[in-house]
Image (cartoon, rainbow, N blue to C red; front, side, top):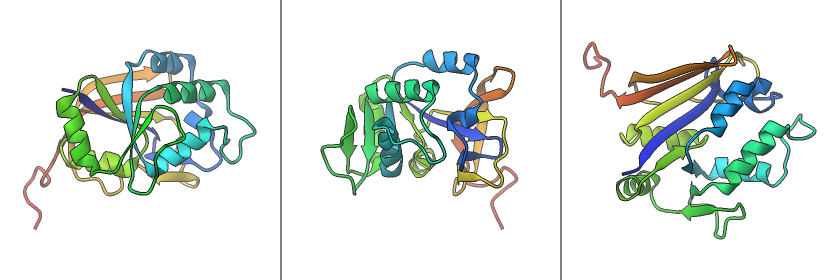
Length: 201
């Protein structure tokens, strides 16, 4: 059976990106980059919006405000291009231009449920906030991991990660600090029907 990881990179205040900020908020260090390089191979899951964004980057479209990709960003994109990817969308059309992508038009929750029960290895989301939220709500997520970078992007922050999420209890299974400033926390999630003090009034 496959394991499903929801994996986010955020600012301290829970944004997935910020206008005018480079990838990793420009704060990735050697310890963090080495850890990224040690991660097990995974099949990446994403929705149409993330596909459009990431495939554009892979094709050389540089984010607004940047003249070029930094070497760390290029290496990350190259690794992602080589990895198997599953894209859930009813609007995109086959064949997808980005290498190693499979388009799935079926219900994402049911498709991932089948992938988990019939496969092996690691499934990991990349971005795709609504997809991650749906998979968590359905009880399919085995591990919930967040790497928090030491910035607050209250003015420029984009893509609030946790909006619309159910209440979730999180049992910590791992934590680590990279380069003296970047914090990783990993949990086993449990979706709650109601807060622990009782049902809502």
